Length: 237
Image 1: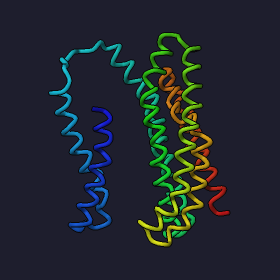
Image 2: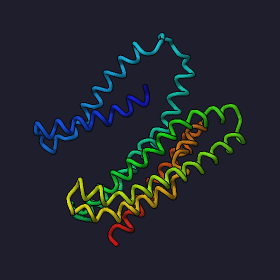
Image 3: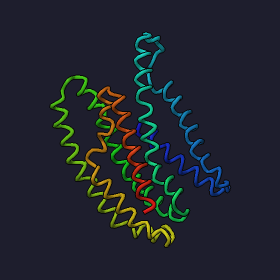
Image 4: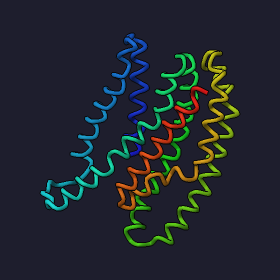
């Protein structure tokens, strides 16, 4: 159910964009596609909650409510930083360069981000294993497991990136305009970064899974801040 609903979000957004081009919808209102997709998903989720899961209302202990609240309060900023981090480069390019350059860059960024979702798939699979292993005190076994995951994912991601880099010019030539050919070099840089980080991307939430929300937030804020500093330093040059 989780996988189908997650996939459904992007399918609904794509369907909304297709409908918007037929209506046609003003470009300034294109983000309605996201809002409508989320509203439809909300209805599906509420239905699934009531009819797909056996549950009964309970009144949790006040201490448990407070534990949940403070854990969330310490970690929500990390989640926000993680989402913002994927848009920092495009926003800052808009400050320093032309719309055409932002468009060329965004094409490569969008496809690279899509490939990066493979790490999210693996992360969703191993997160419960990380949490349970830490809770059970099986740290040594967890270390062996994560090293195996890292090695295998490096190999898998490297193979995917090599094929994608080779196929990218063909994809641009047949599906987009000639202006986007310049994005191939940008895409190669993106893929190089993904290849270097690949083995560790699935473990991105390990502090959170270990019950250390403050450390998780500090980690995410550090990555976000580094991204901003490097963009300010390198984009003008």
